[in-house]
Image (cartoon, rainbow, N blue to C red; front, side, top):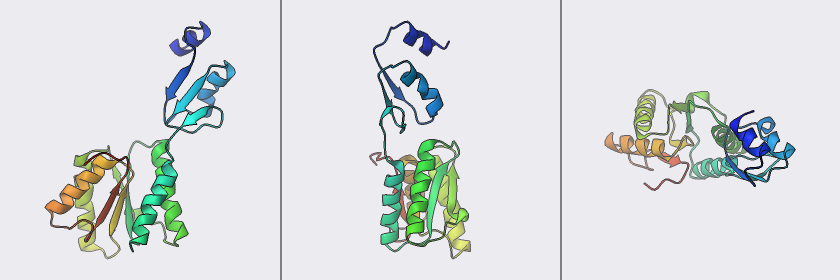
Length: 178
């Protein structure tokens, strides 16, 4: 048994709050099986009561906003460490593009190693280079990787003389105060 299972079987807890974005329903089945009161936070599960962010809907809304502002070449910044949140956010991005008959373009997908301003600055430099060499480069960037990446991009774009949102629009995800 794991320590967690031992605590459940010994009756040392009355309920559990599970915070996870990556556990499978099979892993969560123990709570249902043991009739342990449980709330799952940060992930939807059909087998447990859940409190979670609608990542897909939030991303859809952000990308639709950019489309409504006239953008058609919208880049997206993901993170190397794939998780359910990023997958859901990518789904919202592609949903908004499809709804407006905008083709998904893999060359507009940029990958950060982490949600950091340093990664944001590196990605901004890649985008600037692409803009100088390619007419299909992004006019807007959606960063579901997180706000710190978006802030790093904005700082680097400004440092390099681009005006936000006139020259390039940037939308982050997570609501970190700037």
